[in-house]
Image (cartoon, rainbow, N blue to C red):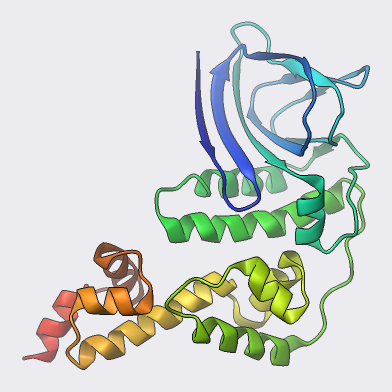
Length: 263
């Protein structure tokens, strides 16, 4: 018996699986595959080698490698998996090419954070999915580093570059600016854009754009615009999306905020 959730956040395909005694015949993938074991022992067969991957283990498979295995009969197994084309992952991390040097990394803290981001990418809320997609890029940089691949050095430019990124985000506030497009404008990979932006602001570009969107919504509401018009003008998915993020930021709904202004 098994239960699986599945989604495609950006370039990535992610799954979250709970099962008992699941096994896989020997097979291969065209993509890089990254697995995180949360509960249970996985017996792995990989290119004529066998090893065990218990809780806290991260398994890494290069495209084309023959793999197989699974959990013993009746044994509970809980894991998340991520699939991404090698060239897409390399581009996200600022690498010319990518090949994992290790098949198994025991990194319990990183495994838990990666699993949490995969689960978050399965969320129904569009913004939460996007935030976790960003988190996946940063975490995959850590995973690739743990696998023995050296990442390019830190981006330069600092505050000036971040100021330009903020200008671009503000100019297109009514429609989400894709992270790869923003990176192209600044000459940065997704990984280096996210890392530099968060270092300077404490937020991802999407989070920064949402706080600006919510702040501008407050100004429009103060001037008497209806919540539905504000949601449409500022690119919220719908009025309930505006309500949710406005309340999270200010502890009050847009309607309640406008009623208080009229007192």
